[in-house]
Amino acid sequence: MTEIAFTKGHGTGNDFVIVADPDGELDLRDDQVAALCDRRFGIGADGLLRVVRSANIPEGAASLEEEPAAEWFMDYRNADGSKAEMCGNGVRVFAKYLLDTGLAALEPGSTLPIGTRAGVRDVTRSETGFQVDLGRWRATPGEPTVRARGIDVARPGLGIDVGNPHVVVAIASEDELASLDLTVQPIVEPLPEHGANIEFVVPQEPLVRDGVGHVRMRVFERGVGETLSCGTGVAATALAVREWAGQGAPSHWRVDVPGGRLGVRMFPAEDGEHVALSGPATLVYTGTVTLA
Image (cartoon, rainbow, N blue to C red; front, side, top):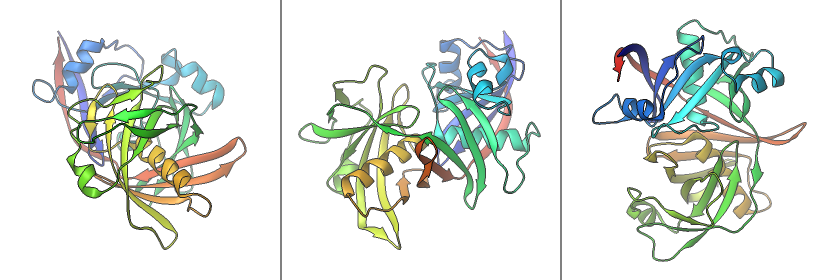
């Protein structure tokens, strides 16, 4: 038996078990991660964030090559223990943990680079908490369809990659969005090689107010199930709706999720258009737990 310290945190209800392992000595098995994230028999969370120095985890070598200042690597695991490329809400919570524990500093106007399996993500402070540059996005090829309990026929989806894969589906009304039963995993055909998070979105009325787009969404995360929020899913949703809205659609969006509201901004960069996510990050409590 091994006892470890942990912190519980969340970003708009997307919650995480945070474990500090600066030297990379803790090798958590998939079943141990799943046990920690279990809401009935464990701490309960949508995923686990292991805080490890980039130099002490094999995946961190690529982060340090990309950005030598990326001292810390976010080893993100889904609630079932599987590894994931990135987590937009997780990056903000990870940054909050680093700052509150004194492991890193973020002065006004400066940037905190964090290593992930999808590359280095830069975090800055924002009015609502933190903003994370999710990097260059891309539309994925193909014409997937999505079936879900609560909609009569398969709906077309749009594939969006923001460091991890998403399929975004337009829903006709608030009532239809609310009636979806996401306790059952939606079916994507064809299913991307590494699976996908699936977002269901409905526009608000009016869609654009004062130059800012407004939509509402729900999400089913691979390896987790329905969550109150998904940061990268929020970004993918805003990108998809902007594509559907056509020329003249804004580059600033507000996306309402069951856990709150997040901001999305698209902007040009040297390597192509980037998308940024902004929102709060909260640390709830700390404790210790015994690993089986």
